[in-house]
Amino acid sequence: MDQENEIMSSYTIVFDHLNHLGPGDSATTRNLAERLRSDLPSASRVADFGCGVGASALVLARYLTEPRVLALDSHAPFIARAETAASARGLGGRISAVVGDMADPPPLDGVIGGFDLIWSESAIYSIGRANAFANWRPLLKPDGWLVFSDIVWQSEPAARSDKACEFWSKEYPDITTAADVVDELTGAGFTPLDPVLSGSKAWSNYYEPLRDRLRLLTKRGDCSQALINVIAEFEQEIDVYDCAGHDVALYFFLARRDSMSD
Image (cartoon, rainbow, N blue to C red; front, side, top):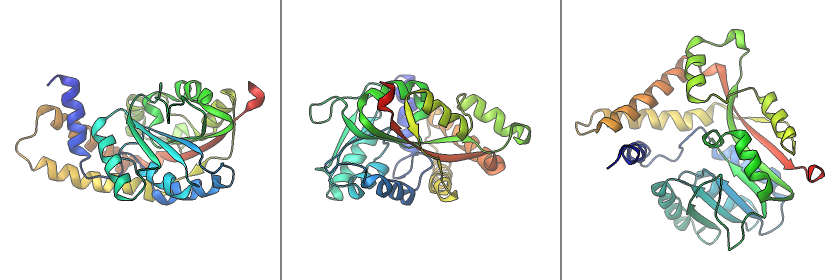
């Protein structure tokens, strides 16, 4: 097994049986979906980019009006879990779970793009906001919606802890403030609404099961070096949140494709 495959295998092991692969809360996803529902057509075309094991795709498929959801992730084991979860909940007919690149997504029902809604939770960082906006905007119908969550600075620069600055500047160089993200959206041809702050439950949903999972794995005597390294990375992330979680926040950004910019 090459190094990259070893690392991805280690991530699969860490997230085995975990529902959240990043900060998130199904209640917030549901509330936002219901907020947009009246503005979306019945049988709307929806993309969930960086869907992980399908937590948000399942909510969208249930709470929007008979949508067709393209649930896309680059990691095949996560997509397999998303398919299983959709089938178990009777939502397999609404969700098409596919392995692919969210910067260059495959067709849904034979059609590239034409989405009424593009959704992405705690995943946009992996391709960068500017890249995402440039690639995703043409995939939306005129006046289609983009909704994504992102980690942003919550504290002022002078108040940020050294620990948080060191960690986030390395792990997420594009991290900025919520106001700056809104400005980026406007510049990229979107009309943003006021961002929505996620509560502490989004973080605990992610970190508490992950913390328990890491403790269990560290007791194993057969961990590969790649897995040991991945565990150490997550432990560092949790430690930074425990010590300096107040410096960052998770916001949802809702924006409509501005057809006047075309």
